[in-house]
Length: 47
Image (tube, rainbow, N blue to C red; front, side, top):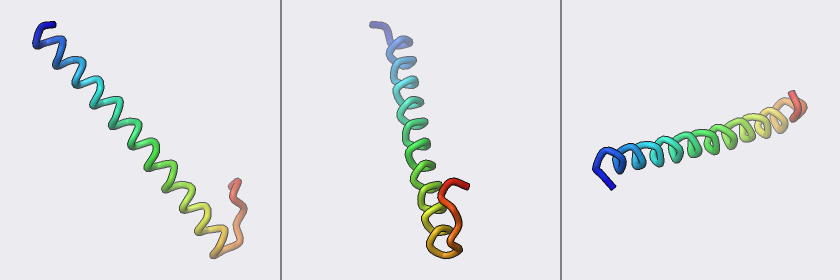
């Protein structure tokens, strides 16, 4: 395996991991915001 192909594979792994982490963090942030609004304002969780 040449060095160029290895660098491309490493870049793709890092890009996939970064996007996965961003999606998971954003999901928990949205859920936290919805729960906070539900407790403080009585808002629906589906809005």
